[in-house]
Every structure is written in C-alpha cells, then in structure tokens.
Amino acid sequence: MAHFNTLEDLDVAGRRVLLRADLNVPMQAGRVTDTTRIDRLVPTISELADRGARIVLLSHFGRPKGKPAPELSLAPLVAPLSTALAGRPVVFAVDCVGPAAAEAVAGLDDGQVVLLENLRFHAGEEANDAGFAADLAKLGDIYVNDAFSTAHRAHASVEALARLLPAAAGRLMQGELEHLANALESPARPVAAIVGGAKISTKLDLLGNLVRRVDMLVIGGGMANTFLNALGVAVGRSLCEHDMAETARAIVEQAKEARCDVVLPSDALVAAELTAGAASRTVSIEEVPEDEMILDVGPATAAHLARRLGDCRTLLWNGPLGCFELPPFDAGTNAVAQAAAELTRAGQLLSVAGGGDTVAALAHAGVAEDFSYVSTAGGAFLEWLEGKTLPGVAALEAAAS
Image (cartoon, rainbow, N blue to C red; front, side, top):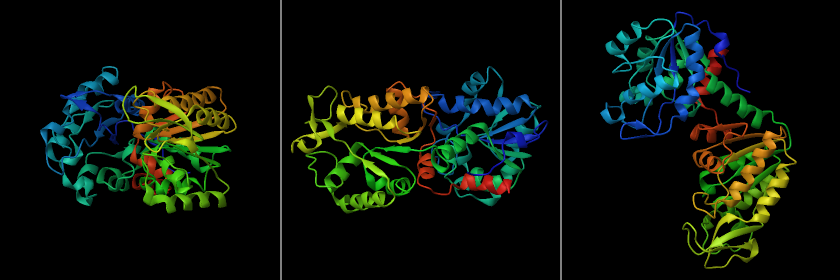
C-alpha cells in the first residue's frame, strides 16, 4: 500500500494550507448541476478550518489551454462551496498566482477559506512547470492533495508542488487510496472483478493486470461480444472488435495460467435496434440471430453472477454489463448491482466501483450509496486498476519518506 502523510501528521493551526481539490464540476448556464465533488471535499476543508488552518483552495476547471477564459472561471463555485460548508464564507481571488492571489491569501484569518482562480489559466500548470509550482508554493506553508481524480496527471499543482512543501493526503484522497489498496493490493479472497464497456482495446492494460490479481473476471458489455467472437460464438450485428480476436484469446490464456476464472454471458437480451422500449427477447448466447444485437446480459447470466458473488469477499467493478441507459437493457446491470449491494449491506462483500459509466449505472440501479466505496475519479481510478504509478500519489509517497 502507498505510504503517505495524512492530516494527523500536520500541525496546521495558523498556517496557510494549499489544498488541491477537484472542482471540475458539471455546470450549465453558470450554475453547478451536480455538487458531488464539492460535497466530498467538505470533510477535509471543515477539519482543517476547525483546526485553525488558513485554507487556500486550488483547482482546475475545463480546458482553457493555458489562457484566461471567463466562461471557465471558478467564481461561480464560491456560493455552492459556502453552502456545502454550512454557510462558511469563501473568498475568491481573481488569479491563482501573483499579486491578486497573494493579497487574498494574506487577508485570511485562522479557519477562513479562499478559492483561487482556475489553475489552467496558466500554461505552467499542465506543463508541470517548476517556476509556476514555485509561485504557488509562495502562497502556502503546507500542501494537502484531496484530488485523487487528478493524481494521474503530472501537473504542477499535483506533482511539482507536492515536492516543495510538507505534503499530505486529505480525507478524500486518503479514503480512495485505502479502499483501492484493500480491494486490489491486500484483498480478502476470493476477489471478483466486473469489467464492462464497449471495447477491450481501451482496457488492455486493465485486463492484463486484473487477470493476475483476481480470482474471477466477469466481462460484460460490448467487450464480452469481442471475447465471445474470439471463442467462436456468432454475435450477429452486436458491437464487436473483430480485429481484437487474437488479443482476446491471449487474455483468456493469461487468465488460465493465473488460475483466474473468466466469466462470459451464457444468455443475452437481443434486439434489432437500440432504442428505448425496443422489441427484445432473451436467447442463449449460442443462438444470437445474425440480424440482431446483444444489448444486455440475460437473466440466467445475471442470476449466475449474483450467486457467484455470494462466494466472494471482494468486488471491483468498472463498466456496465449492458446498455443500461435504455430500458429494458438495464436489467442485467441492475440485478447484479443490487445483488452486490445486498451482500455489501450484509457485511459479506467489500465492493469498490469506479468510472463514469459505472457510477451512473449504480446510481441508476439505486445502489450507489450501498457499495463500500464508489470512486468518482475516472481516469485515475482506471490507471490505478491498471497497476500504473500515479504522479500525484508518487509525490505524496516521496514527501513521506
């Protein structure tokens, strides 16, 4: 498991704490439409404020390409941040470095919060520029990273800055790293992984890492069609990477060598078109009509997976089993997600899930709050599952050594 400092290791009273957050939240017409990332940041901000820190929030927003873009300002986040913090005032600085930022930080008292303008208004952020990181470091005494979702980026506020000041993980970062370690590095066995989505070409590193680490690998979504095709099963007009057949067979062989059981659908819900309420039917996986598409796992597959999860102690989930956005093709994902949630509530299963479609699918199934941990980190979550070193985590480890 990664070794890093946490808030317990810091004396923050009266000190300026540069808190790297991820406030890249969904917005429409200048209003935040989903406050999840703000809400998850509250425990760290509140704890630091209660301990007398002077909190300086750093975040990116969108892709302004190194230049100021008014439509990508963080100013609209001041009000929702203050609301999430139970009315605690949040000051806004019109830049993240330079005189405006320095003046705003200098005006802070113990327990107060300032939000600096979008880091990506400066090209030095994404370039991991040492000079830009040094300018940020002048504004603080301590660095805390609470943005695991950016940890896979070697950006100045994520990587370089962590090497210039005493550094630690915030509560959100800490929780993410601990849950991932419990699920992948030192898990209770048997361990199952569910991997779905459209294409195996985008998840080769993930599959290659998981077959060596888990006991059961469930493959769903369009990816399953590619594996079925590679094993000689006709998949009709289903989404399928026919050119990846050899790769799919190689992954199956790797799994056999590692004694990892690869589970593919035994039945499927098929239809001639992908539209809400389309006429559909369940067929055996060997009987997919050549003019129809596999759009979800069938009820027998879902029931089988639910039973198999009952024998497991740890579950990693990345990617839906079918086209969950459109009923009735959400049934398989819903059924398996609800089974996993029930096992989690009963204390029989540690369940960790992540990835944009996965989070949406679990919310759609009504079980997002029942899993042990649901990561909103997207790319960072995926790269961690792939076994890659994340620059932001490596920088925190270096700071703790």
